[in-house]
Image 1 (cartoon, rainbow, N blue to C red):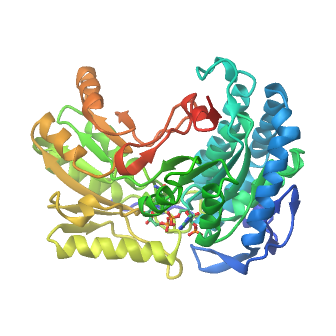
Image 2 (spheres, rainbow, N blue to C red):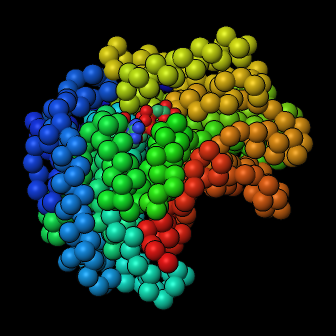
Length: 480
Ligand code: NDP
């Protein structure tokens, strides 16, 4: 039967109210950075969106000085109740400007508008609401009767969830009385700079939050200040490779560190699982945000007896995903964030074929311009293949099979990473037994990629250490 075509349903670009240029936010002011001016582009059509004045070394020093003054002065002395009011204000303003922020995020990142609208922005607001609630209750959080802030938190975030990662970092830092110097990723600075506007409008005292757009050298400069003792803590989310560099730089110094790094999660489907539901969970696990998710379910482990049936259903479902313009409200899979990331996805996918795995991609017409990659899966994958070991960070699923629960555990844990995992089965006892044996910070049962501010998130092994979210997320910012 012929499919009904979807009529275009574009979100309005005007809602973003993009300005021609953006500046760093330092000591309560927007001002030109001492770095270069770079254009941030829309990955869906490769056109420039705005010019961003990047921070330089001097701006890092100014931001650190402003953050120290605020930490030692008005912000450091403010009661938790008063700090909480600022956080509630920021949370409300994000919610009020949600549509604008969603469009900004989609234009700068390439993710489908329905994801920025329904996931990224509401969760960012929810994080501020959640930590606003903790600000006056820190003495009851289980970290001693009067836990103290660390001082200044240097925060470096990636491009896959730009506003959400800023919220994950800034909200707990402020709730606990710290001040912040944050660097967004170079390819996605805009939503963090709109957040800076919100922070300014919320009347946060100068220096409490400083936002420095810039490249890797600015991230490295923030880490250097921590190594020199000018910054008290580094919170980093990004690649394991850069996480290792940061850990080396801070080894032997008093600076505190939390790292949220890569992953290669196993999504394990048993033969008693509701397969249609599992198919939806697999799709959400690896094709959500074009697979550019640290906790993506990038390795499907399926019990051999149902593997053929599941793969047929999965391919059928993938053929219905709409790939293309991220601003269209019907789009399921948008653009890859950058040419460099697309090249990495292509390189790893090619290696999969070269090493003997079988590649299948959904038939779809990709836009002529922009960075797009079709939803893809590999079968005949063995554990030694690069596509089973390395983080692809794209819409590419590697399928492996198993016969017994023990084999599933062995294969799932056979990775240097340990961020997340999923289990699909009807048996509650099996879920608990698997969750106990899986070496992963988060284990989802009969669902995947569910996030909530009340729930701690973080990894084992090369996925990093420290937890973000929930009561646990406070600990990373408290001296006790
Ligand atoms: P990076 O780890 O390089 O980037 C993360 C953040 O760190 C960015 O703000 C980046 O700045 C900054 N940074 C880069 N180098 C340094 C440094 N030496 N010192 C301090 N900060 C630094 O990730 P990429 O964007 O390069 O992505 C590469 C791969 O990493 C992806 O393919 C993916 O596999 C993985 N990744 C994992 C993420 C996760 O959440 N686990 C998130 C992003 C990527 P800038 O943006 O200017 O380069």
